[in-house]
Image (cartoon, rainbow, N blue to C red; front, side):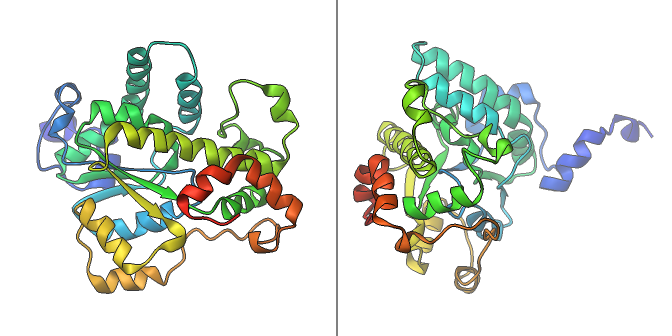
Length: 289
């Protein structure tokens, strides 16, 4: 009876996610030494580039607990972090602010990952602008950079009404911290192209700060079996060849709503709008615009 009285309903939710705990640890102890966690992995991206597909694949390894849409998803806070990096606040203060926000949203996830001996993975793109914070407070964490042809990404954003009629999405989308007048004159293609460039540019800067041993790049437009094997080896995930091959044939989270032509049949004017913000990084990634 005493054990039943000690049971907390909140724990039931976490047990449903992670399974029965095998260890005990308090939040305070874990937060004082996050190196106790076994190599968490975080995916950095713009979104709309295969994150859900990878989440489904990685979840085949039962030693991993992967979240594509964790609660809270930190989307509004991610936008705040983008603006914070552009402020004159001291870098160490930005890290401290970001770490408090991130841990407020993830401390229980990380604690139950430790308690249940599951490695924590997150493919949610709304932690992208937290990357420098995560890298600092969890030095053993690894990161995957997912990127996609900007024309395809822009098309997906237009079909979802980004920066126009989709008010719920717009509240989560970053905008330039300065030069608001120029932004108001951007077309929808230019705005979503800017989003693609700004997000991937931020990730490129982050990658320079942590080194290649902690980051793995994935061009979603060149996804193949060999590349998947190399990725899984990098993050130490074990999935059978048969499952990988079957998953490569599957499509996840395919967009069905909205109507906008594929990039290959865009007009020259539309492609020129995309080039205004995306030409340099597109060349780096080997994309033709």
